[in-house]
Amino acid sequence: MKMFKSAEADGGRTYGRLRYIFEAGTRRIDLGLEAKPDMELFVASLPGENENQLDVPVSVYVDGDGQVADCQGASTQNSAYADVACQQVRGQAFTKFYDEDSARISYVQELLIRFSTQAPDAEN
Image (tube, rainbow, N blue to C red; front, side, top):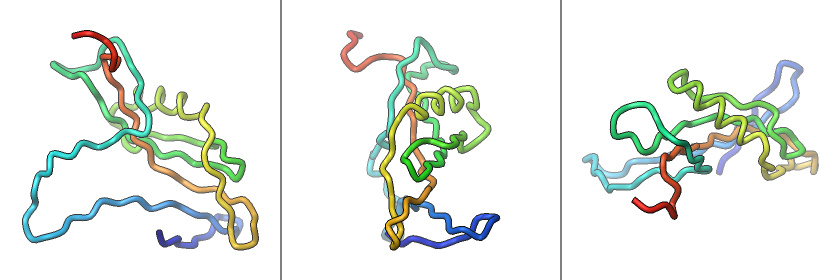
């Protein structure tokens, strides 16, 4: 993973983690792969007909202590679900990263939170 250095308003360094999916070849091929969520939350119902799951991407700003300093939905769509996802994410501890001088650094991480209407062990 390559790290790109940028500066905060005060001139200090900031870091981000880049996760990406790449396509190879000349044709788009559906491999039937499903995005794996970072966290799954179970709810009584979801909006829309025949909806049994809803994936909500959020951006999390993690401070040098590995704690969530800020969290926002990646889009304005499903903002109420993004707010709930961020509430749940705030209670999690994240990996601490260090720079070349062994100082703790903050970073931004993208997470995929899945809302599901049925727990895995529930009967149909």
